[in-house]
Length: 550
Image (tube, rainbow, N blue to C red; front, top):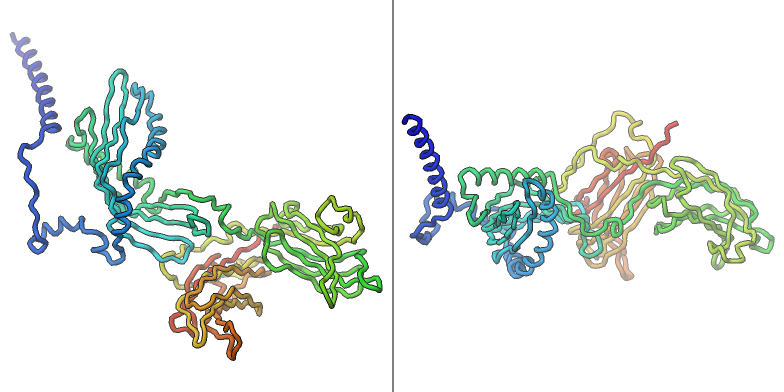
């Protein structure tokens, strides 16, 4: 009897426990209260301190923070577009989720995972405020405060052995503060190449998950565990400074080519040139340029009355695509009256040059580059050149420290301890984006004037404006870094009609180039001297060529 009583006691405890768990689960998951009262509203002036604190998270950002703007028009747009976004997103959700599902097939006897239904519901997300940053970079940065209390209905079927399990996602709530950056801005629709998204804080995610009709998120302890797991997973992927980059356009096809090196050309001499004047002589000079380059051509001096000129003159040309560009060599006969006659020409591909290796060439001059032209067989003389391609250092455009991209940053000079740290030829690039609030006393037709080492470069003139946008780049090839030099950028205005005082200065700034050499790059807005409110936006870059070690 003692054994039987013990056995039935244990059996009764197990059966009773099982029945209690099942009954409790049913009552907890499926039972609904019979009497549900509608919430009673109160005026704000009748709420106590505790109730006001509970209400604060629901107040829109544009109310709490003056930096955020109200965007009701954008919410109206999203609301009207939501039914179409819902349908268009079905394919995207499937393409993202199905490869993930495929990784689980075969595990724990899972035979298949398929979508039965996908619907984002009828409630669209709401943007509670939008903050837009003004930066010095070629980009657009904004931070929307997004909330979505949606009613999606996403049904997934999991076939486990012979059992068919339905999993349903319902009643989702998301609160996130992403930073969305469109960069770089380009003159091709949609006018940016990438969308960069980063979360500024951990998102708040809440949702219902039904399995076989019961909401398992109501199980105590599971809800908090799932919440924390989602936050950790999303934060590890996209919480700032991590980001998600979505390519929109191919940057290589729309962005301007950047300089990658300098071609050093020494024009030594020419021999047996054509006779062009009555005395059987010529007045030759040489023009040099690179294919695909809009910069002015380089010219040698004119050698009078000779068919064997000696120049020994050096030139520097900026290279952007060494694998596809050609050096164009044209030899002309100078004439005092009329057009100058071309004595001959030749092209040389830069891909045949080794980096930092001087190559001496003797090239036959041709009438044209057309190999089928029978006149090319006529002897037009030869030209002797020395070529050396010097690529820029890969790290020459890097910063010594991070730049503040969202505010004007004071320039700090961090001079090197040794002048040897600055040694090496390089390229100084000056990009003048535009100016603001420039005003002349007689006219407003502004253009930018860049003065460096006595050389002057001018931008295009924009008529009748106080906020010109030039977006022009100027380049200077230098033998040594301009550590102790300054560059002057001046805004000028020019009268478009005849009259006295046709030119007028609207302000200027002098920039210490030691900062540029030290940092590799500076992108700042400067207050113009001799201007009441005027500012100018200038970007400077310094790139040093590689030095061949012996």
